[in-house]
Length: 271
Ligand SMILES: [Zn+2]
Ligand SMILES: [Zn+2]
Image (cartoon, rainbow, N blue to C red):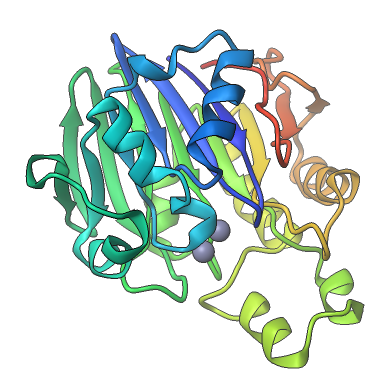
């Protein structure tokens, strides 16, 4: 199985996963044109996708969903709440392309097994998920105010995790956002801080996770070096060796740690 991010951050998010002859996009938050270009830089044919899974309706996750789905005839999987909020944003979709997810469920999309779980975010039904090809399992959770017990349970034991490290708490507090927005971002339905991500990752790495890709960094309230440093410190304090890497490929027993680029594709990673 292989995965990568095609874009990450409040400008737009898109994750790509392939395995068992099946190719998924999770969110499509840049324009279709930008995402197609980012796929092509990795040698991925945009016409070879099998489905789009949408985590929630915020524009940084759905901007390109409608165009990609219509252009390539792709089914779109999203929760009922997300469909309700997203339908008017993504334009006309044929009924046979509309697939509704429960907030907690297992499903198979062609050769890949997915587990869907709810995430705490200011939306009408946002989800995280794990994807398995039967041999390896990777997990994805962004846009979460905190790591709920349910999320922790589902992500435990994943070989690789893409986890939000949205903001540095101090940069957010001292930064230019208005008070209400600071409260929203730091709140229980907002976004995960670097430290919260690091603390959760210690538990996941204790159960075997060895590849960690930090995602959805704030442009205003975070810096890639700071996210890496904060998470690496948590992991080292937890007793792990950490390998800071650009590729996120497995590094023996050390935790391979990298950051998802904002506008460009991260290299494809084998899990
Ligand atoms: Zn987002
Ligand atoms: Zn969001």
